[in-house]
Image 1 (cartoon, rainbow, N blue to C red):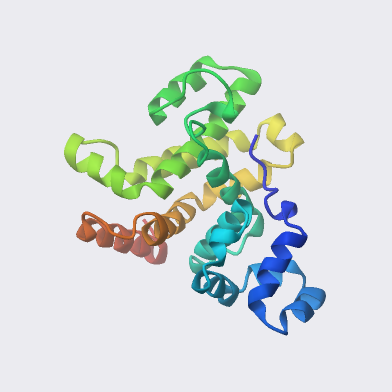
Image 2 (cartoon, rainbow, N blue to C red):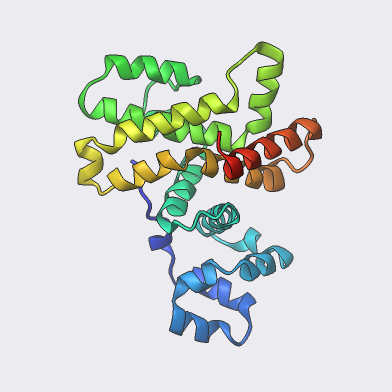
Length: 237
């Protein structure tokens, strides 16, 4: 089960990497304000990018920094939410993991509707894990591959990104009240992810546009998607 523990894994190596680009004042800030002061400083991220420092950094630090600042740009200041989202990207970025429930064995899921069908037949822990996977998988697909979804909508009349937003939010919301979520301290977090799902997904879209697929095959569609998200965020549905 993915948990918000990426930040907790940071130690001396990660601190030294950040201090290497912060200059003389970095150690003082670290002592007085804590590690989060460096992690949340966009200037530190920019300097790492300028010096190609991310290529030498551990993957958890890279994913956390990129996700944290993508969310901050959307005025999402929830560190635990950023931590969890980075954990999803780290887990699903491993080959063959994205479609599998809790990284387990068995036939992977390709479509959200198949997960919904499996939820109807499941009970107990399996049902809980499927509901969480519905949220995680929707976030992964719609967050990191929005251009692919847009292409499928145009070519095959497939569901739009708003469908992924609705399904993902539902997955987290219905998992939040489960006894397993409460036992692991994830209930409140799942509710917050559900409430801000579209905003988190849009933040990941910006990250994907900038880092993974900077050269869009259809820049007009990308601009329209970004404008739609900004309009929804500022003026509601």
